[in-house]
Each structure stands twice: as C-alpha cells, then as structure tokens.
Image (cartoon, rainbow, N blue to C red; front, side, top):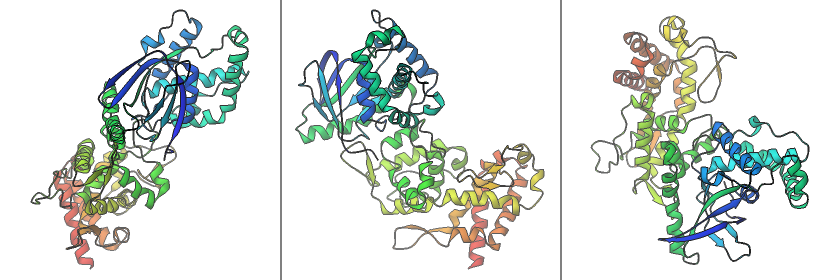
Length: 475
C-alpha cells in the first residue's frame, strides 16, 4: 500500500497554464535532474501499466543520449509525450519556476502516463551515475520492470547523490568523459485542482483521474484487467486471497506488465462458478444485474467473463463510490461468493493431480496428453506450482472444476453462497473417484479432444450432474 502523502519539487521551463472545469493544467519542460526527486517519492501506482525495459525504453534512452551529446539541437521534447502528472497539492510560489507537489493519494495521483519514459530515464540516470563513479552499470535484467528498477534505485541512491554533486561541482570532467549532465528536457503536463482549498473541487478532481488516465492510455489499449484494477474492482477479491494465502496473493497480476504469475482474469473466470448462483445473475430474479457467462466461457472466453465481472462489480447495487476513482464492494452475497471462489484455484490444482490417477482408461495414450511432451524440470500445477507426474490439458479440467458448483448452495434466509460440504475432503473421497470415472466418458465421446471437451456445453452439464449425484449419495 502506498504511503498517504509524498512530496517532490520540480522546475518547469516555458511554463503555461490553463483552467478546465475543476482542473488547472500546467505545461512546461523539465530537466532530467528533477526526475530524481519524482522517482524518490513515487512509484507507478497511479499508472495503469507497470513499465518494463525493452525496445521502447531503449529508443527513449537513445534520444536522451542524443540530446545530452548535442544540447543545441534537442529533439526529445518533441519526439516524446513526456509525463502526465497529477497532484492534489501544488505550491508554485517558489523562485526559478520551481513547484512543490504534494501527492496525497498515490494510487490515483502521481505519474498517470509516461511510465516508460520515467523508467527509461531513471535507468539512464543510474547507468550514468555508475559510469561517473567508475563503476559497472546495473544489468538490464536486474531492473527490467519497475519494481526491480525501484529496488535497484534505492540500493544505488547514494551513488546518484554523488553523481549530482559532480554535475554541480565539476561538470567539465564529466563532459570530457562523455557522461551526461542530465540537462535533457522532458515535456511535462501537470494536473492539479483548480481550488485546492475547496473540498468539492478536490474530490471532483480525484474522481476524474481514472477516466483521464484510461483515455490517455488508449493509444495502446488498456486491458480489461488493468482497468478493473485501477477502479478497485479486484480489491475485495484480492483481500480475500490475502487473508487465505498472502504468498499466493502476491503472485496475482493486476495491471499490465506487473510481473504477476497468476492472471487475474483466470481467477475471475473461476469466480463466476459461485457468482452464477447469486440473485444478481439469476435469470428470473428481479434484482438481476447481468447474465452469468455460459459455463464454456470460463475456459474459452475469459475476457468475456472479465467484462461481465466488471459490469457486475460497477453496479451501484454491488459497490459503493468512495469519493475517488475507486469503488468498494458492499453486497454481502457477492462477497460470500468471492470467498467461495478463493478456494477454486487450490481445488483446480488438486483435481489436476487427481484426474490422471482416476481417469477411466489409458490416460497416457491420449494424443493431447502425449502432445504436451516432456517438460524440463517436470510438470507443475497451474496455480500453486505443485509437482505432479502427468500434465492435464485445460480443456479436460475446466468442466470438472465447474462441476464443483453442485457443492455450493445459497441457504434460505441467509443470503450467502457457501460450500454445502468441505470440498477438499469431498474430492479426495471414494465418491468423487466415481465422478472422475463417469466424466471420463465425456472425453471419450469428444474424440479425446480438449477443445471439444472444454467448449462443449454437455461437458459442464455432465460434470455438474455427476458431482451432484455423488454428493447426494454420500450424505
């Protein structure tokens, strides 16, 4: 979680201002040395993407080096969009066009656009600092995404200070060694509230930031997952994962390029299994908000599942506005369904391990299984990466996981979705072995093709019916 308040001082040259609604827009050019203060106090919480080093950032650094080498003909300010900053506090009364910025909510304020520019310039500054001190520049692989870069930045921060001191006191020696003086300029667009002492104006300003952020990033369209993350629509779901297994929660991706191993859209697709039992998705319910996605979509239409999830969670009946760009889950039934959904990745992995053991037939002879080949280091389950002996095509497994819906119920008068029995004990029982054996016939009837199984509506119906029958007979 970001700290509540941080400050930075920047200087803008050729500054101009505009007033638009509740927002004051300040435009100008900022020398590279002022990025140091911004990188110190900010991360990329407000930016919808987690920037990473690659061809784009390499090109940015080439442009910066060209401007440093030929300051009389700078092109970077024209070639680059620069940075879009937002801060709820701004004091521009300092001399030499310096501005003190106060970022009170770093999840909505900070660097809204220009994360790649910031990462590229920051990596350039680190490299030049180490060169100035006669040290080896940090390896790109050690800081290829923002979090790694920021960690390296903090480790080498004293070197950056020493480099800045050399720029002030002995720039000629650096110039002789062809080391940059951080005089390259970055275009900056700064958004601040028009009236900082007016609470309504500040609230309207913050509420506008997510929409502005999404629109500015449409040139490389934001994924549904990233938009949902920025709107806080995963926060309650992630909090439940954090409560259940903090280590697993750390592996869940939110925005693009954040390095998360587990895609949030995969978890959302599974969440529709219990969410489909709520009154908000029931076809005959007067409270219906959206139609639950068809069962086949949890395997073959995860983006559609994600889109429907966002539609559900944004509804005023489900979530409250918080006075900023974030929404907060308020519905008890949806929250209970998400709590059930937290168990599904673990259950998915358990079934991944059990399925080959209890498949009715010669599992190893199935063409799709043979086609998965031998994997160096062995096979692991998709979510928790437990070692297993044999791989399982996803198309075979998703209908079986959907069948666990038969173990979920909405108890009369309680308005909550809950497990009717301990699902982990049940899938390890003799009764569930019979479910897998019966479900094996679906695979055989589908010509052993995972695509036909995963995209066939009857696969899901058969798995749910078999699970329901096995549960009732075991009671």
